[in-house]
Length: 217
Image (cartoon, rainbow, N blue to C red; front, side, top):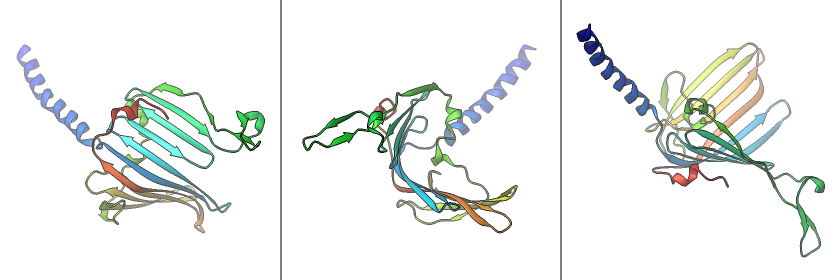
């Protein structure tokens, strides 16, 4: 019995190493980059744009999303996700801290929310890591995005009365998503409903300052 246990262990150990190696190989490289995110609504003919600054070492990350009305920062240190928001919109004077400047005009200051902290295993942060979007189907050579060559993926699927079209450009070397467009149409007339587009404006691969994963603003 002892011999069988030793044999089983000797077979299981290389398999465990292979699994660990596969997981490590699947981890994305360290980088810092900037994306533009545009949300379009065809039903009301409107669109909003936000800028997203990302720093990641493959496990930890820092995401700063900037918009006209709201800024948000999300910092993940490998164990905890900390979120804080900064409201930029013009609010009623009773809702903001204000003062009188040298001209006598009243000024409204942005409001910072209290930081929100929650324990979160790394696997549960996947929905936040938009740059790790997985491809569907086969790829062809894509456009150059942020000075990087890409692989292009295209997918269409029906979801009830909706058609969802996804176009994805991933960095040919690293797999990082550099551009993605997800469009939703109403069937059968293919009426445009919504579209979300991410476009990387610049990206730099290499070590990231560890302080990025401990500080907020």
